[in-house]
Length: 268
Ligand SMILES: [Fe+2]
Image 1 (cartoon, rainbow, N blue to C red):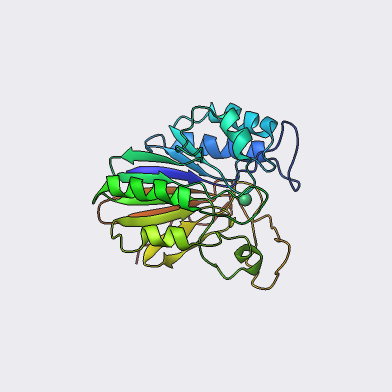
Image 2 (image 1 turned 90 degrees about the horizontal axis):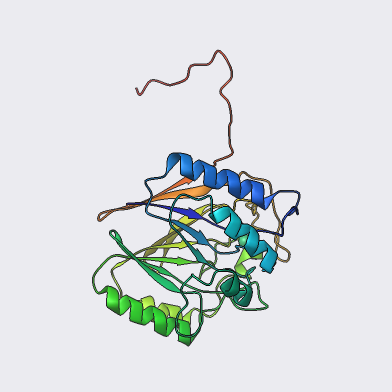
């Protein structure tokens, strides 16, 4: 089963740019590429920082663009989002019983759980006992089926100090719920605006670049988050019984091979 992950689209109100880039043009091109190449995907998940400042007009822009995406889509929120404005703009998106933007998506490949790590007024994330109780109940109902987690903030350091300051803090409730469960196949997150993968407490994870600005590989800067114009990407993900595959696609990168050069190479 194929799914798509798009993250950190940072929409702004119509006609505005962000750091010299157009979030609308970037997302339009992203959706066009997905429509052209991945119409067979089961769904597209947008993993937070949907709006750069959480304004209603930015969510209006997103709703408009989602009308052109030919896949079913699901949304979760990040630190740049405003939970109240989001829920007004997207009344069809499910909430948990406490009003958090958390939902379960049962697909043929397994159970996808979309978590809400937004902490109003903070760039860092949180996962409180109320949210963890929802997660625990959904994990119980999954029984032995494969589970895939989607959340905006990573719950661990990635050794980039400017981002580690604003990771998911106080992971106690999340760790308590996840520990010992052997059916959690992968953790997908956003927030870091760059590709990174590995494992955390035995759970494989991956993240990818934003559709707009990126965070450079900077192991020194501690305070403000630096940014770069590295190319935007989306992820093509295959969820299979025996493996999870994540491909990162730089959908605007043309990188033409010069005229006169061969178009393929020998396999041996
Ligand atoms: Fe972001």
